[in-house]
Amino acid sequence: MAEHVHVRVRRGVAVTDDGALVERYACRCGESWTKTYQVEGPAPE
Ligand SMILES: [Zn+2]
Figure 1 (cartoon, rainbow, N blue to C red):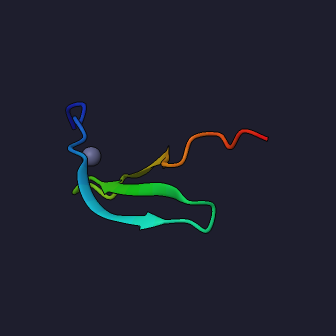
Figure 2 (tube, rainbow, N blue to C red):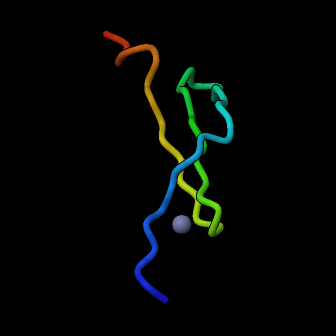
């Protein structure tokens, strides 16, 4: 098979207890990824 170019489709978004935003992506071939964003910047202490 020729090299497959993944197509990342966003499957959903979740928010963790830490307040981070987690986006889930998946390709039709079954490969999946997650991307985490820190919504609230590093808390100054
Ligand atoms: Zn793929």
